[in-house]
Length: 231
Image 1 (cartoon, rainbow, N blue to C red):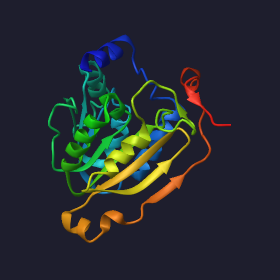
Image 2: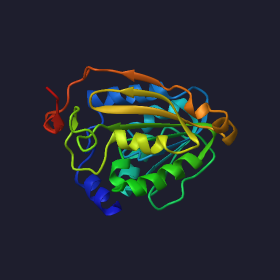
Image 3: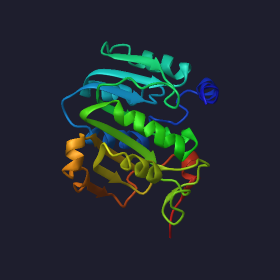
C-alpha cells in the first residue's frame, strides 16, 4: 500500500483537492465535533497537511502521520511554523500506534485497509491508543457498496463510512457520542469509556445524530461523476 500512495503523491500535488469548498466544509464540520481542551493528539492519514494545519490550534501537541514520505514532506513544509506539530511515517495496518492520546483523528483512509477483518484489528488498536475518556473523530464517504439504495459514491472500495462506523461501534470500550450524517459522508465522534462505565451501561447512552439532507456545496466535476443520487 505504501508504494501505491507514494506513486499517487509523486504524480500530483493534492490528489484529492482538499482545498475545494466540499472538502473544506467537511473539515469545518469535523473540527466542530472536537471537544475543547485536547492536549495530546494524533492525526492518522494526514496526507499533505491540509487538515493538520487547521487542527493544530485546537491541541497542545499534535503528531501527524501518513504512509507516504512524499506526503509527509509536503505536510511538514505546510506546518513549518507550528513547533508543536511533528510528523512520522506510520502504516496503521502493521505499525503500533503511539498511545496515551486525548484525541485521534482518522479520516478518509480506513477503506484502503481492504478487508473488514483488518479494519476490526486496526479499530481495536486505535481504541486502545486513547486515554480513558479520550476522543476519536472520523469522517468517511458513503459508498454504494454499503447501501446501494442510498446516495453515495461508486468508488471501487470494499466498504464505506457506514461499515467503518459499525465496526467501531462494535468495540466495547468505545461509545458513539455524536454523528453528523450528510448525503455523501458521515462524521463520527467516539469516546473511550472504562470497563466500569460499560458495566453501568454508559455505552448504551443515546448518541446525538444530526441528519443533513441537503448537499450544501458543489462537487468538482471529476468527483461528481462518481456520485449516485437516489431519485
